[in-house]
Length: 109
Image (cartoon, rainbow, N blue to C red; front, top):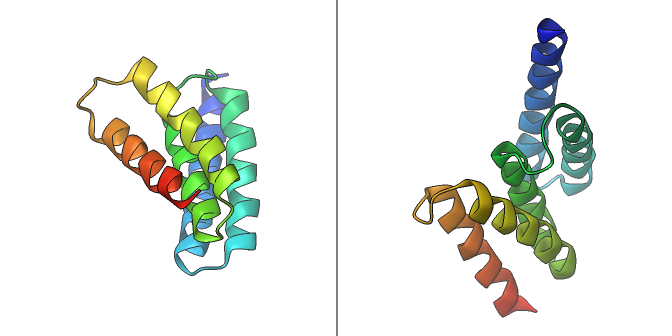
């Protein structure tokens, strides 16, 4: 069972990394496909409030921000902020980044 979980986590990470590569290349549709696959795997193997899940939400938020879909960007970043506030220290760099992205999106809306 542990081996299966480790394999699923590895596949999720590879899928997420591919999505991030496509996002950086501005191929947003392909990136979104990979992010959604990675998110689905991640939600199945980790707790719903896991800090790694917040990182995926952050990247999905950044993708939607890049395509000017600010309401979707806000939705995903809000989830990242909520998990970060619950699971990370108030000075953790990831939580600070999630909050910074939140403010950036808020200014665009």
